[in-house]
Length: 369
Image 1: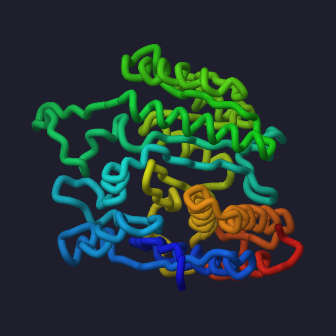
Image 2: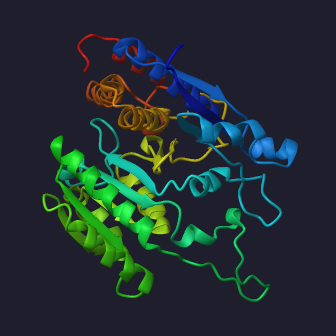
């Protein structure tokens, strides 16, 4: 089809295959309902299974496609029994973050009705925040997959934490713009820089740049929190936060903690955004213990697909894509509100296939959106 948007589709390992298939089916239903756009999902080999067969973690075809197509979608990658010789996991997606400078890791955290609420306070039902994780620097700068030189002996190993001005400026601008868009939809209009500026020079630098960029967004509240206090506050008062912008490792940890507050990793969507490319994936792992059993919750993958529609709307100016992204969110909200979505992850009776079919049914109903 002319003007189709082409998605480099890397289903990966374990439940990655099942949840990606669910996402594709749901976005096809959105496309049918909304009209005005067309997605073509082009599948390529990648992951631990491919590494076991070939000794490479990404196929040459995939390596080429990810740089040329309109977006990248990753199901889940890695298996606990398949590792590099140094013991690290198969993780080509980390290299893709570096290659395309996908500095803005967007991790939405939203409480849905009739899902497990880990906090007793009734205000927890209103949790709606975003962890914005810088995804190319920080403590991941010297991650094993990048093969950067550093001290590594049988007596001492050092990993380097790097913060740079250009990336930090773009990250903070992204955070304030995101908060502004969320404010237009009823959000708090607040950005919190999460760091350890009282101990590390790198973190003091990150905070300094944060306040420099905040001056350009006088309509958005700017605040700070130390990482240890932020972890505590996500338990005490998560409803008081909107956009949390933070270093790579801190964001990795906080996004999982926050995900646990709203049910689990089966709801943890993720977008990795750079200046020229975008990668989308559920933040959960490959869950080999339930692979092939129709038990996985596909909603993180589907929500990640919704984030992809939003990204493509930004790139193309298409209102149809923007409407499609809202439809995904609205349908999931309605599905939980009416108890039509009951994933096994939350103690319900619906596996991957049943959740997918029901969500497609909701999307197809005229009353939604």
